Image (cartoon, rainbow, N blue to C red; front, side, top):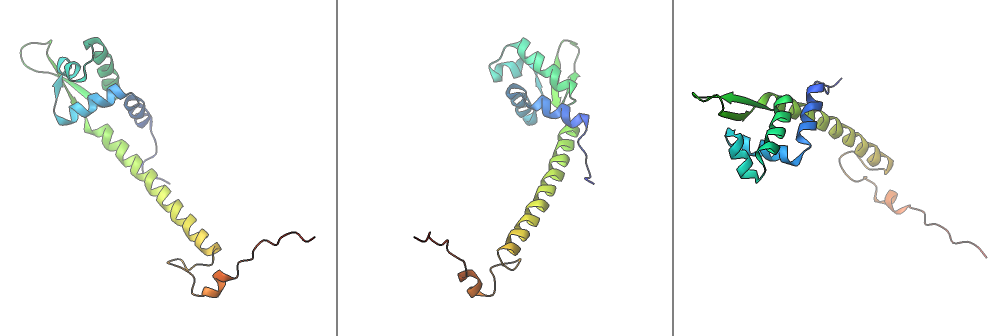
Length: 138
């Protein structure tokens, strides 16, 4: 059984990251926390559009909002690493599964071809015994 089964949180993360604008926001926030207006300027996007995407990222718990200072209107956005770590762990488990599957497939293909698991067959005569298709007789 895999260590980290896919969860609704991983589904939410993948859905949130499916949009190129949201991935752009994540790229900006991985450098440093930023205000929404700064994100809009850097991505050459309208503030309402950035606000919409930030709402999705907050809803998937990829981003958190921090109201700092005396002005409650000033909001700074930062990445929350937990969701990305969960996604990384899940992808690692999936990758390990496929590595195991491909190694098994390679071993089976090598065995079917008469090769030793670590390299070519010891007998060069085996490789030469391949039958050629016969041409039809007249």
